[in-house]
Every structure is written in structure tokens, then in C-alpha cells.
Image 1 (cartoon, rainbow over the protein chains, first blue to last red):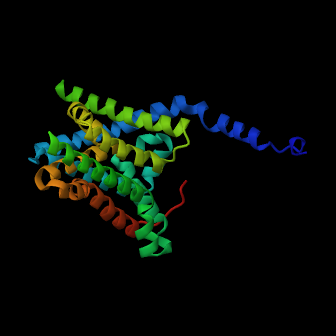
Image 2: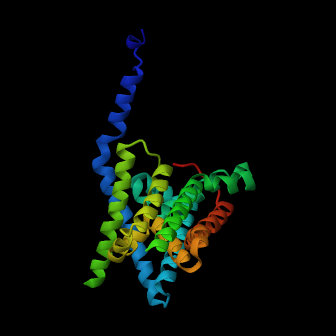
Image 3: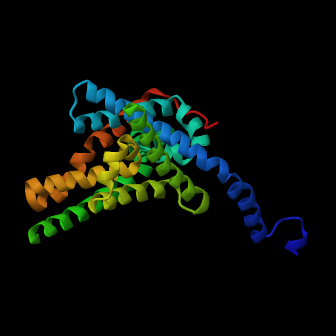
Length: 153
Length: 122
């Protein structure tokens, strides 16, 4: 009955969405992600060189670069610019550290109306939280392995 | 000329990390959150087995700016801390290394969220 009622069946529907949403445009999305992501990294390299010229040691210059990129991404998210670039860039604006900053600022801003503690303060970590949890736990596991390898070598 | 080559390497390697991320978005069901988590954990593992450092030496910001670089930073911080403090370093090294990035994201995130108004997404 549902087959003839003019509504697509679930299988047909998933085929349709696949056809219109995915593979048809990968030839555009992947180069765009490459281009914009690459450009963000070039900006990072420019900052890195500038901070090195300003007399920061290698480690501090790297930190300053991260802080600057995070600041710019936060500001551009507030100005609604970052998300407009992200619509075209996809993973190009997600994968760099600026995407991490955007994933913090965007929900913080959006859920501000739900309060400063459980809205802004909690929702800030909706994506950054899992990233920190699994990143830190992975680093602890590595640290323990590294320690015991050091004992035996 | 060296300068141009340096930027080109950063562009190519950084772009490649993002292109891989886009392939994951286009051809798998991985959500952006899962991709970010995978990238950081991959960075810790690649840093731990010693593969990522040569890439950082080669590509500079092209390898440190993508979130795998954040993972690499965690692994580097933990190794340094374990060298200094023994097993305790495993507990402190990660956050120490990541402090600047995470604190910046929290601080600027709060400031921007306070100053700006939430807008419609379009």
C-alpha cells in the first residue's frame, strides 16, 4: 500500500538522500576542504615564524600560535563569519585547531539563553569535552607505557 | 625560496589532513565530534610511536595546526613529564602541554559568548 501512495519507502528514501547529499559533490567538498584547511595551516606557519622572529623559543611560539588561532576563530564565530566559511570548507575548518575553538564558542553562544552555568558553561564542552576526555586518557595510557618501557630499556 | 617551500609544505600537509577529514565526512557516518576525537587520539598514538615528530619537522604548522597536532602535543608533554617526574608525569604531562590551547578556547569562548548575540545560522 505504501509503495503506491506516492510516498517513497524508507529504502527508496535513503537511496534518494544518498544520491543528492553525498557522492555527487565529493569532487567539490574534498578540494575545498584541502584548500581552506591548507590555508589555515599557512596562516599558522606565518604566525609561527612571526613569533619566532619576535624572540619566542620554539615551544612558546607554538603556544602563541595556537592561542592566536583560537582567538581569531572565537572572534569570527561570534561575528558569524566562521560558520559561513565552514559551510563551504567542511573538514577544512573542522580539523584545524580553529575548528576546536569554533566547537567551544558556537554552543556557548547558542545556549547562553539557557543560563550561564548549565547553558553557556556546560554546553561549551559538548564537543570539546569528549575531545579532552579521550585525548587526556590516551595521553595517560601512553605515559604509563612510556614509563614502563623506560624501566626495561 | 626556502620561505615559499616552507609555506607550501605547511599548505600541502595541512590540506591533506583536512581532505582526509572530508573523506570521512562524505563516505562514513562519522559525526564532526567523532572525527575531532579520532584526530586527537590518532595524534597521541602517532606521537607515541614516533611517527608524528618527523612530520612536524617537515611540515611545521601543517602538522601542528590540525587536531592531530594537539594529540602529538599531549604525547610530547607526557613523555617530557615522565622523564622528569616518573610515573606521576603520566598524570600531569597531557594537561600541562595542552594548557595554552584549552585555556584559550575556554577564555575566548566565554568572552565571545558574553559579548555577542546568538544569531540565526544562515
